[in-house]
Length: 257
Ligand code: ADP
Ligand code: MG
Image 1 (cartoon, protein in one colour):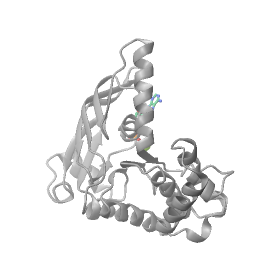
Image 2 (cartoon, rainbow, N blue to C red):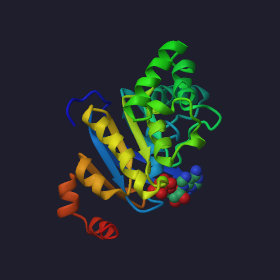
Image 3 (tube, helix red, strand yellow):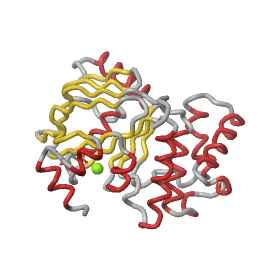
C-alpha cells in the first residue's frame, strides 16, 4: 500500500439473521483507506453475507456499517426508513465495486459494452467519455485487444479481469471480491491476483474473500478469520501465519499447508 485514495470502512456490532439462523454475530471490523483485507474461514461461516451487507445487498438486524461515508443501520419498521435504507444502499453500490466468483459479465455484451454500461446509465457519462475510460481500464488489466470480444470468447482469467475493469469504471472507493479466483483453472489465478496487487499499490481499499493463502500472506494488511458467523481472529499476515492467538486459526490454516 502506497497512497490511500480508497474508502474507510467500519463495522460495529453487526448481526444478521436468515430466519432463525444467525449468520453474522456481532461483527466488529475497521478497514483504513488503502488497506487490503483478506477474509478467510470455512464454507458457510458468513463471508459472502458479510460482503453482501457491506455492499448494501442485505438489510441488517443490528449494528452499523460505515463505508465511504455512508451509514447503514437496521431498518426501523416504516416505509420511510425502507426507502432511506434503499437510497443509502444504492449510494454504496455506486461507490463500492463487487466482484464475484463467476465473473457475472453480461453475456450478450462485448467487454467494452460491459464496462461502459453502468457509467453511462448510472453516472450519466457520455458514450465517448465512457468508451475512453473503458479502453484505459482494459489496457490496465491487459485486455486492450479484447474490447470487442464477448465474454464467452475469453478464458476465465480474462473474464475476471474484465469484471474488475467493469467495477473500476465506476471509480469505486472500495472493491469487495467474493472468491474471485475460485472458479479459475490454477494457471489463471495469478493474473487475477496480480490486478488486485496493482490496485493495492494504487491505494484502493479492498476486501477479498479467498483461499489463496500465499496471496494473503504476501499482500494483505490484515487477515480476518471467521467461523460460525463470528470473527475469531484479526491479525497481520505474520501474526496469523506464524503465531495465531486462537487455536481455531491454527487448525483452519493446517488445511492449506
Ligand atoms: P460463506 O460465504 O462463508 O460460505 P455465506 O455467507 O454464504 O457463507 O452463508 C452463511 C450461512 O448463511 C450459511 O449457513 C448459509 O446457508 C446461510 N445463508 C446465506 N444466505 C442465505 C439466505 N439468503 N437464506 C437463508 N440462509 C442463507
Ligand atoms: Mg461464500
